Image (cartoon, rainbow, N blue to C red; front, side, top):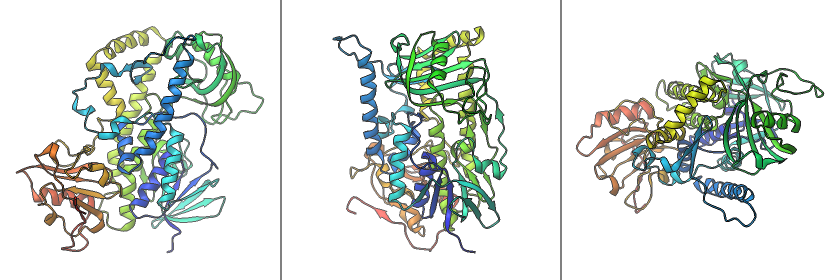
Amino acid sequence: MSYDVDVVVAGGGPVGLMLACELRLGGASVVVLERLTEVDPTIKAGALNTPSVEALYRRGLLPGLQKAQEENLERFAAFMRQRLPEGEPAKAPPRFAGHFAGITLSADRLDPSDPDLNGHGPADLVGMVGQQQLEVLLAERAADLGAEVRRGVELTGFEADDDGVTVATGGGPIRGRWLVGCDGGRSTVRKLAGFDFPGTGPEITAHQAMVEMEGAEALGAGWHATPTGVYAHGPMPGRILTVEFGGTPVGRDTPVGRDTPVGRDTPVGRDTPVTADELQASIRNVSGADVVVTGVKTATRFTDNARQATTYRLGRVLLAGDAAHVHSPFGGQGLNLGLGDAVNLGWKLAATVRGWAPEGLLDTYTAERHPIGAWVLDWTRAQIALMRPDPHARALREVVTQLTETVAGTTHFVKKISGVWQRYDLPGDHPLVGGSAPDLELADGSRLADHLHGGGALLLDPAGELRVLVSGYGDRLRVVAEAVPGRAGLAGLLVRPDGVVAWAADTGQVDPGALEAALSAWLGAPAVAGAGAPVARASA
């Protein structure tokens, strides 16, 4: 049977584009279907966590992230300057390390000696990057890699069989070997495929917007808990977020006419435009300030509906990002969770397409990513509980606030928010196995991430003695024969294409059988006996 493409990706947001990039690096052809004709300007996620930045850094995209962050920091500085009385010099604000349920975390309270917060190399210096900025960066990268992105084309249906998937679109059918739904929280792919999607219903109505308003000085900057909810003002000029309890939460599919009045007790559809009056009423209700919203640049409303697919794969159909899990955006986990899905899935699906994937490799996608998704759902639910305005929740909020005012407390919360805790349960007792590969500085002046731009697996062989054990993997595995001055006791490190350590050993503890087992588990059987992997040296 003929195919138009190896993989059809429904959804061209950051998750779909990241997946397309990973698939192309792995040698699979891909077409991305995106119903929007241009990047959605609606205000969305504003930060990347450590695993996301590491993944993008390993693909050579750090310069673009740094440029985007510089632009955002300048806008933040402008917001702080405009709040100062005329002539008053600007003061450096407290170093922001995130928030938990609107409880601000100060970077000045972090434990700088905590090993989990160190060793990430240049990735430690980037994080304040917006979703739209990332989407533009990834779209350019996908195009450079040869991924086909069809904007203004929407998946309307599909038929899956044992050999592939026929996708229906307004531009005609597409036959692919695989279909991946990256089409958001109301995923058409998920619904048509019949994935179970259990979870908890909403109890809040929240708004996030970029607006022009009068009386903003009464709001104060940062996060605020009030008798009616929680709101945040800044860190960009005009940015406002409100969280209201009571009334009727936003309906997911409630039909609303253009002339239907929208209020706190009126169910509205997710696609109903957010008006200046609606935002003004919400801001006044939560803050008590008599602000006047004079213009809306971009706005969205959301709830804390929290659901997760029980599996991320049904036959030839897979899910990633919000299509696989939805939750409130508090703590900035959604975009990052989806990027992690894409990085984990991309190389595994490409290996399956190319025919060298070991048995069961694709099933490790759900096994590895589902527990992290479940954690994120509970992490966001806990924040909603602390945002409630009832006396019991406010008492608990005060206890948590006191914890965040300690070094140990802030360090714990920041480690969770930053994602540095994330690891997979892989075979092996070396402390590096299952975690993100450290960005080691090598003897030739390069860093480990510099050797991962191509998207393949990597074997770090400091003493040059392991190459004979890994013959036959060709372009699946690159050997880097360089010493590691800062870690002289490390004898070897096998890094999967997604940057996860699959095997490691210290000097005098190399077990050839364990290395062979790791290679077999993640890279399959050698293609040609005696055909060695490419070796990178300082002189190469």
